Amino acid sequence: MKSIDCAAVVSIREVVEGHYLLTLHVPRRYLRALPGQFVMLRIHERSVPFLGRPFSIHRVYTRGKHTLMEILFRAAGAGTVACAQLKKGDTVVLTGPLGSGFHVPGRCTDMVLVAGGMGVAPLMFLAEHGAMRPRKRRRVIHCYFGARTASHLYRLARLKTLCTEVKVATDDGSLGYRGTVTDLFLMDLPQFNPNRTALFVCGPDMMFRSMALIMRGSNLSCQVSIEERMACGIGACLGCAVEDEHGIYKRVCKDGPVFDITELHW
Figure 1 (cartoon, rainbow, N blue to C red):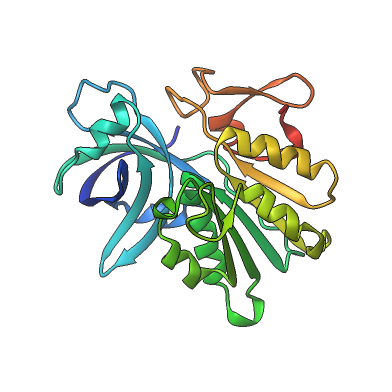
Figure 2 (cartoon, rainbow, N blue to C red):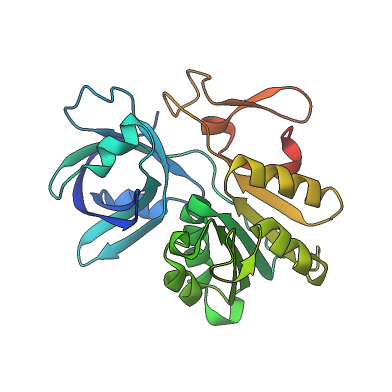
């Protein structure tokens, strides 16, 4: 059983309409969190929502003697709307870090990140880890970031400081390539050597389905971080089960949320 902690809200701000960046003061052990892991968050002493909500870890860092964790989320349902109404000094209850993180193979010299919308949340954490490596061992980080419109390319400036190159796609053509981020990535796919490149993907379900089709014709390794509704976050309730390629159900919270794209049935 993972530890349950109380964490204080340091700040919360709306980064674009309906989307929020929450910063929490957390125990120091969260510095060991891996990109791709998540936390279950519940508002302290609130009966509604009763159950916690899963959130990808967006960033963990120190400021002075404090350890801070950032969560990037969209206010969509009752639970996330309640989280958007938090104020500085409020207390939340965290369980975590939970689940599996991304694995970067030792042979990998090129990391390719493909993010759709809020899928940038765990991938930026991964980019930050990659950028912290010693210069002689640093990997080339390519990022493909897609959203509906330019205003929804959250924290694009931050991404550009972490990655070697960033290419963007918007549905309306307001910035970068007009179309889907998977189509943008597909145009560059031949340039990546499967022997030294690892691909990491996070975004909406339709994006995963597109990437699964693309990967059928490629030898690139591809890891996906998927989201499902969760009640417990520790594998007990089976509410987040997904079907694998053999028809066996796996728990996103316990067996994931990071999977090889070939493991799952799309």
